Image 1 (cartoon, rainbow, N blue to C red):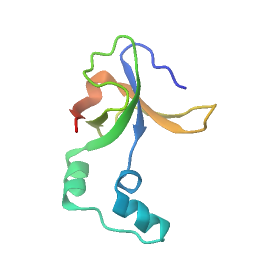
Image 2 (cartoon, rainbow, N blue to C red):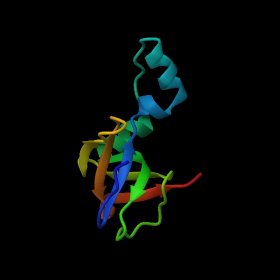
Image 3 (cartoon, rainbow, N blue to C red):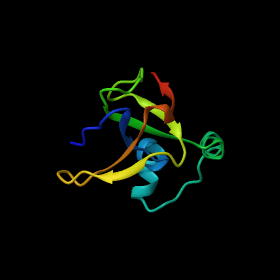
Image 4 (cartoon, one colour):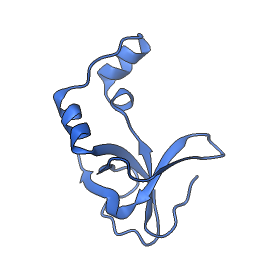
Length: 102
């Protein structure tokens, strides 16, 4: 597990093809669906989404692990965990724009 330092936050970066059931089924079938209007607006606004995995000890963030958040596009650095070989995004807490609560 990646343990962030200072003001950093570790996210599992999500694409529409990983979180939307219709896109997941289509991808498995080899079909590429166009993204909907909301996703296009999100991309044009420079916002991406992810799930919080870990939060650094000094991060000033109302989110907790498991919460979905929106963050500034092109922020952070992608790293790979050597144990599970999954890729994560590490960014500063100030790059988190909102917490999505259900």
